[in-house]
Length: 180
Image 1: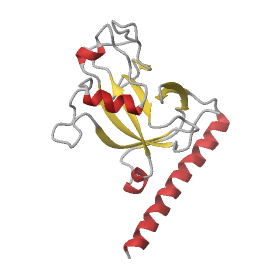
Image 2: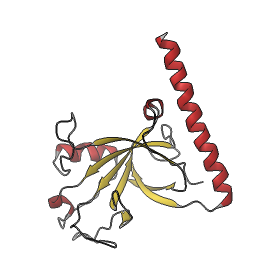
Image 3: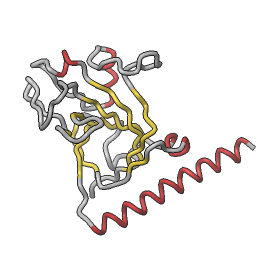
Image 4: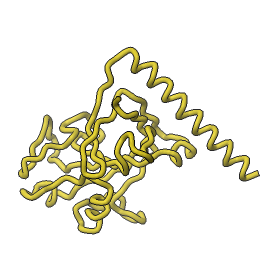
């Protein structure tokens, strides 16, 4: 019975993802894709932002989505418009609307590489003020750097009491196909 339930959950997740991808393909034929930059393996890539967002995704969808680490930059209340850090760095997403107006993205693997999936589960992190505003700031550009950064204290503890206090695993899934 449990095996049948797992198969049904996988089928439901696959059907939901397939439906969203079909909608994306149809929408992509009508408009030029918008893109955003992401880091993976130390390099910068582009992914499509004209795709879907699934809020409160079902467990089956969450299980089959790869993480997209959204690393926020702390800013003073009332900050608007783009920012430039003392190091000269500007966030990939610089002054966009909430919920995280200043942030970078990090993926486990590069778009188009084995293991990349268009459904991406949002995982939130935030740099510390001290690190982000240091003249020697360097952005995290790979999963390995992200893990090392957690060990070295460059991220704020934003999820106290959790096994990993530096990350918040949301139930939001972004469907972001690669840009051809």
